[in-house]
Image (cartoon, rainbow, N blue to C red; front, side, top):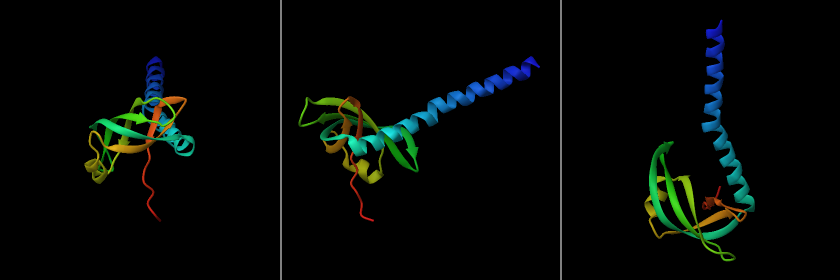
Length: 120
């Protein structure tokens, strides 16, 4: 009886850990991206470094970029962004490339790339 209780408790702990490490951060990131898209301040950023993380989503690589964000109304700051890019987008991004970003002025760790809108 004790063994069944311990096994059940272990299963609950494993499920909770999986939720905390996988699903919950993705939900938070999606909400943060939506909030930045609507209310974030826009600025230019320069890529300081870019590297593949080794993770692929739908055969498209996730990259980690170190960006120097250059807002017009405040001092420059450095932020790290992880994004899934198409192979075509990845081929155009190098150190020194200038991008448009949106950021949270209250928390400069929240930065997202501004994607070009495609018609249709």
